[in-house]
Length: 342
Image (cartoon, rainbow, N blue to C red; front, side, top):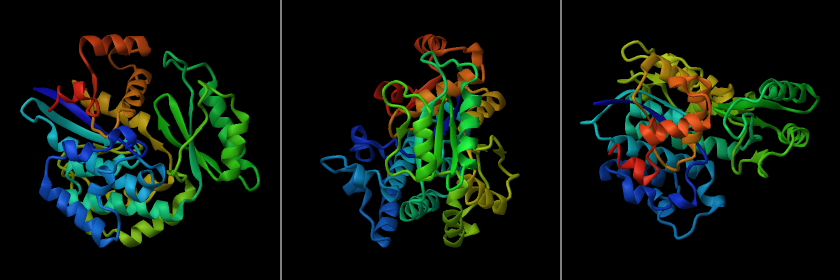
């Protein structure tokens, strides 16, 4: 029996290659019917129509009110598909909106209530569409921190944010990447100030608002009005939030969990790097399993493990060597790796 921490992905992971993912992998028709009922009641396109589309559309599939629902369903379906005869899940965490999925995987939400939360949050953020996000790396090609780069970037973010009529903040600490969020002026200033890297960074994220910053306070307020405490319960598994705090089974106050989820989780930096480090140090799992959709989160997990020095990992080569001998991070969006855990 191998132990595993499950790490649920966030926005930006359901793209053109993922069309048909739910049809191919979602294991529970009754549960999917519950999700579809909620979509129908909200006059939203069905997951079946989105997932079964002949072509991927950034305008349609990338919208927060569609993307959040697709990603939640795909990730939860993969969690349900894990082979529990060979894998013991010891904790769950997630990146950004993956926190909502993590709560459902951990049992703090029912599947339907977790879908309601993810779908509602995606809709509220899409409707408000306050600010935007971009991604910028601070480690080298070998995933080793470049001296002074992180501190310089954080100083730059703070300096831009201090300018009149500019708003900018660290949105997600994502392994060797920074997700930066702000208003139009703040993002433009950052984009101008940093040197281009790898011919694609800084990279703007389409259909992404300024998640995990104070700009989202109105969205958090609307979420609290729409999502009652009754949706939240005790987790059955430890679940690690975007501060690295562990919510333990039998010791998690429902109102406190709601306050974080619809408060600081929305308006403050999401420290995914710390969440992964805490998962590694507190639970020392044999595996880190990343449900689908997509495979992009695996690199950020690997970078976070290198930054934490897990199993002596110091760089990208170390990680690739370990993966070739005894895989540590398995992405269920990859058929070869999926087969090892289902």
